[in-house]
Image 1 (cartoon, rainbow, N blue to C red):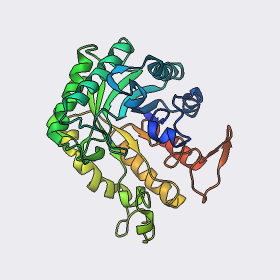
Image 2 (image 1 turned 180 degrees about the vertical axis):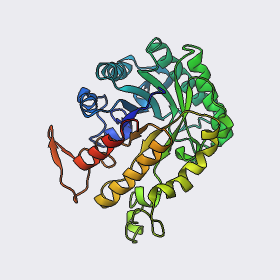
Image 3 (image 1 turned 45 degrees about the horizontal axis):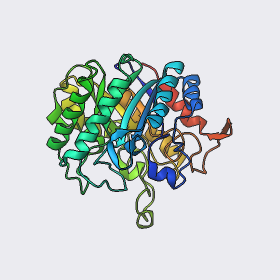
Amino acid sequence: MKRLSYGFNLLGMFCQTKMAEGDKRIFGHFPEDRFQWMHEWGFNFARLPLDYRFFVEKDDWMKPVESQLVKLDEAVRYGKKYGIHIQINFHRAPGYCCNAPQEPKSLFHDPEPLAAFTNLWAVLARRYRGIPNEELSFGLVNEPAAVEPYGGTPSSYAAVARAGIAAIRSVDQSRFVMSDGWRWGKEPTMELHPFGPATGESIHCYEPQLLTHYKVTNPEKQVWPCPPWPLEGWTDGVEWLERYVVKLWQPAIDDGTFIHAGELGCQQGNVPHATYLAWLEDTLEMCRRHGWGWALWNLDGTFGILDTPRTDCQFVDFHGHRLDQKALDLLLKYAKPR
């Protein structure tokens, strides 16, 4: 895992609810062609944000569904076939998700979801024991934060993370495990520091959110124009990112924590293409300066490079999809050591 890794989040089993509502990015499995395309382009990393509800019986969180786990096995095999490191992450864990719909119990306070959470990780650790860390890593739970009604705090999340790591280590002592930073990946969870061997922390790079999430929530209330990049008053976007993003992570940098940007991205439909490309290059340059690998959120859809909703750039036809070639070229520019 500690090689420099660059790629995409793949949403094949991201959200059972959104799939039922017709979200075309969520297939209920992971198509092989996405791994093949990533390999052909020159990327080597895929983060798989998962919804635990795909993998357990509806009325029994402790009972895994073998037919669904087989679909995850396929993704792991595709990763090996195409030289793509796979990182398995629970975007929705029993008792916690930063997105709707609301979970019935709290991972941070209730014993049932914590038992289900640790059991799932033990199941996966056992299932994939023996696969080298160069090919596979685990990411505990996506974007822990003080989301209502779960009542999480840095301390209660740290306890959950330690329980998850212990469950994995009880089966596979060497598996590399990532923990997302606190507050949606915006800052390190210092209650978990210093990190031990075969562990690291994931930063999520969506700053400034008034740009990256422009008109994502309550768009009818956002009557002001899209912000420029760099922001007004700044001539150097990387320096803004150093001050307002990297500075928060300086304690983790200083104690030698392995850091990887498990998510970065910008909503495509509402931000001008030139502004987006300028922001993306500066964010990638920030990552390069600090030796952080990264994964764009996502490949297909509103934050990706395929079939985005924007209308202000020229797309290239790619296997029947609309490809933002300029964005791809920029990603490839940074998908290599300096």
